[in-house]
Structure formats: C-alpha cells, structure tokens
Image (cartoon, rainbow, N blue to C red; front, side):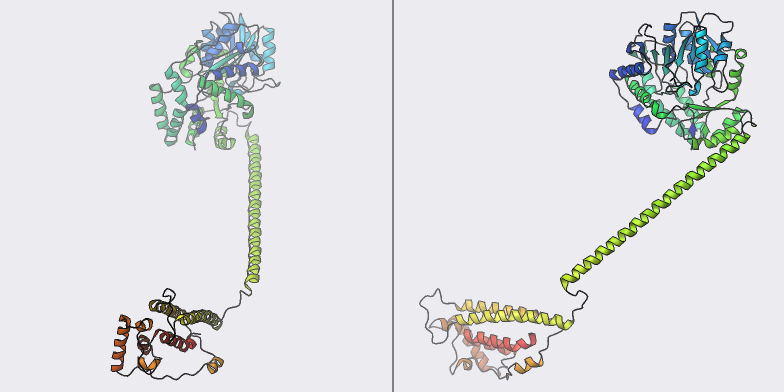
Length: 613
C-alpha cells in the first residue's frame, strides 16, 4: 500500500467522481455567503467569494490597512501570503515561531515589533491546524493597536484554548479552498468582515477562464492516476507529474494571481458549503502532524522504500515553495528558529488511519532530533499500544466466539423443531392411514384385485342378460313397428361390445399370480363334461337353422346365404372340435342364430370364469 502527502490523497473514489460531475447554480453562491455570514458573526453584504484565497486576503488588507503600512506574518508560511500583502500595497514583517506550535506567540510578536513603525495588522495563520496562543497575541495586538486578521486556510473549524473558534476573534477572517487545505475544492477563497462599520464588499460576477475551471474539475482524477503510477514505480509517478505540469494539465502549488474581479464557480460553491457543514463532525484535529528529524533526506528515502511518499512538506523552507523563496524577502538571521525548523521538519497526514501510519512514525522516530527525550516515552507508548491492541483483539475474538455459539444453538433448536414437526406429521399420517407400518401381503393384494374383476364381470353379465331379453324368440310374432324391432346388426354390435368388455376383464387378471379357487368354491362349481359340437343345424333342432337374415324376414339374405355356405363346408369337412375349444366356439358361432350365439358366449364365459375370479 502507498500513502501520500498532497496529490488529493484525502479524496475518496466517491468524492473524486462527485467533484468531477458536480453542478451548481447562483443559489449555491448565495447560500455559501449566507452561511459564512451567520457562522462567523457577520452580514451577507460583508462576505465575498473569490477565485483563490490570496485575493480574499488582499481585499481584507486593502479594506483594513492604509497603503504603505506594514503587516506582521509568521515566518513559516506560503508565498501566497507574501504575494497578497504586497498586492495590497503593504510590507510584510516576519515573526519567528515557537517550535511547539510552528507559529509565533505573544513573545515572538513583541520581538518582531521592536524597532518597527507603522505596523497596522497581524495575520494569525494557525499552521497545520495547530491553534496558536491567541490570548497572548490578542493582548500584544491591543497594546500596539494592531488589527487581527485570521487566515483559516489550515484551521477552519479549529478552536483555541479559550474555546473560541478560529475566525471569530479578529476583524476579518480569510478562507482558502485550495489543494490540501481544511476545505479543499482545488481552488477558491472567501473573506468575512466582522465589523459592521466596514464598507460592504462587492461580490465579483466573473469566473476564471474555461481552462482553469476544467483543470480544477479534473485535478482529483489526474492526481489519482499519478498515485496509481507511483504504486507501480516512483519514477513513473514523478515523470507523469512532470509531464502534466509541462503541458498545463495541472497547476503547480502556489501558482496563481491576485484578481478581485474573479469569483469561484457555482459548482465549487456547492462543494465548499457541503464541506463546511461537515466540519463539526470531522473533529478538530490538525490537517498534518509534524516531527523534527536529523538527516531528513535519509528519513524521507526510507519512508519511500516503505511506501510513504511524504516529500510535499510544509514547510521545507521558511517561505515555500523554493522557486518563490528569493522573492519573499525573508532573512534567516531575523528568524533563526524558523530557519532551523524548516531544515528538520517532516509531516504525517492525518486523513489516514493512525494504525496505518504507525510504521511511518516508527521510521521517523529513528531520526528524531533528541533521542533521549523519547526513549522512555517510546517504550511506554509502545506498551500501551500493544496492550490496547491485545485487548481489542481479545474482545473481538470473544465476540466472534459468542456469535458462533449463538448460531450453533440456533441451528440445533431449528433441527429439534423440524424433528418434532416431522414426528407429529408421521403420527397424523398413521392415524389417517390406519397402520402404515404393516406390510400388505401379496395374497391380500391379489384377492382385492380379484374382487374388483369379479364385480366388473357381474356387471357385464347383467348387461348381457338384458341384451338377450331384447332378442326375439322362435315363434314370436314380429312387431308391426319396425322402428322398435332391434336389427341383427345392432344385436351383433351389442354382442361385440359385451365380448370386448369380457376381454378387458380377462386382461385385468394379475400377471404374476393367478388366484386359485378355494376348495369350497371347487365343490360348489358344477362339473361340465366336454362333448363334441354337432353341426350347426343340429344345435337348434332337427332341421338346420336359417341364417341371421332369415330370422328377420321370409327370404334368405346375403348374410344367411353366407352362413349356409359356411355351415355346408363345416359339415363336409373333418369332425368338429369340442365346443369348449376356442376354434370350435368360433365355428359354432358362425352357424348359430343370434340367440344361440349369445347363449354360447355366456356359457363359455362361465367356464372361463373360475380361472379369473
């Protein structure tokens, strides 16, 4: 994992996309001005929003101070502050700093004022978000009749030791919304005048050139790409950064101009307002921590080998960046503490988790200026951290163990409930089905099947008897109503249906086992002797019976002639087979009358019955 100072490394992926596609309107500018006025105890007309912070500072100095006067500033600062003072027609005076706060206090301010005349104001900067000794500064300022201007670039939302918020003490407050500041939208600034007697400030209406706003919109995305190349190899990241600067895709830090005619874009006003409202929830920690080390270059290189790219230091020179140092007018002999600190200071970003920064802190502490001061404290701190980590790990492990036990208990209870429900259902099924565990024997199953077949057989026989009753007997008179007299074809069709039903009953007989008749049934069953079937004519009487066609009318029909021909051929042929034989039954059936055919079918059904039922 790689960690960075600068390069918009505090932006998350969501914030980067939100910045890239943000939109706004004039309403957001008005809302921002109203919010700043209400928050810092001013009025709407005494608030103005500009394209950068140095313009806002220059406007404040011009409003409060007389041209040609002097202004006290801290000796660890950015060239943008010096540029704003000079643009207002004033002269900067550098005050040395306290090594604990990186800012001047009451004593340092008094030393800076010695031998100076026409000093009109003092700018309180609160470097890195570390609160300065505002009470001591305020006392000295009142004694020398100096106006206090608070620069909130690093300290928006920070409170002083006496509880007052930065920006509510001085006559004017300045905010910067540039890269790496407390409120970061890549560019922009604002001024808030607390004194209602000050003249209203004009709000500019013109924005920067299109290319400037496009650069501001795309910078977080381009910075993320640069960080990605650094993760591949540091040289790739440096080359890519240099290329983007050369082709003006990104602007270098501290580059800019003072122009009170330019305002911040509407979409940036919307983002600024969102960040200002979230400041109370983000806490009051500094935007960077600092350490003083010997051999800073060696320390930085070791940090980079471990994945910590912390070269963008505030302040590696009393007035940075280096390319503007010679223009600042800083004299090292006047501020020796600041000059010494600038050679030794390193920064740690505070937007990363402290746990992730511990390896970097361990590396830095190997290079600290005074090792004796931190040896015992380092051991104590390490012990405390280890104990805290151990306790946290133990608590987390116990919580995980309890969670696992609760889940196992829930699973066991669920299994018990399922088993109980299953048992209950089985009991219900047993109550409905009788004895589900008893196995039905094959004999019982066959008996039930035989009973069903017997019932169907009886139903078929009953239907056959009804059909027989409809067939006219010999000697009966024909009905005068031919429509009511059943035709031979209809009788044959009914017989075929009955025969088909009997065949289906035979097919339903169990294939594996045939039900054997009991001894009792065998005794009751009549014994029939198989006798040879006589000629078709001898069955009905002495003379041959006429064909089916002769029964219906007086002359032989085609069906009757066919039956006679079949009868003659049967008489002339070999001896007829027994009536019980299937072939013999079919021959007899062709020669008999309808009534005799039906009787013969029923008799054959009785003979075959014992084998089925």
